[in-house]
Length: 111
Image 1 (spheres, rainbow, N blue to C red):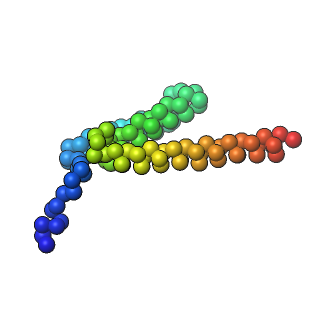
Image 2 (tube, one colour):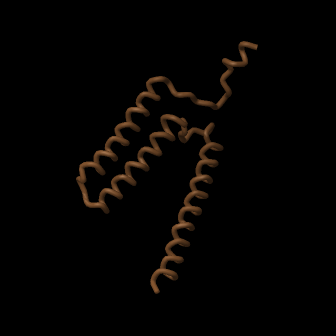
């Protein structure tokens, strides 16, 4: 019975302590950078939005690589397929919502 708890499934990759620390430090730096950009008013509002959106995308990739251990190996093909499907669904839902809200705003508020 004690062997069942230490059994590692084939195809699973677990990160080392060092990789978790590296991921945490990178994520913390990206978060502090975003807060600093907003608090110090270093850029125009449009540029601030763009830079924060870019930092958010980078942070998503840091989380995917360092914490969820997603990579391009053949053992990860189902995880990557499920992730791609989820991203497509979210983009459709968010894009559709923005389109509908904009359309309603143009039809109702412009009068």
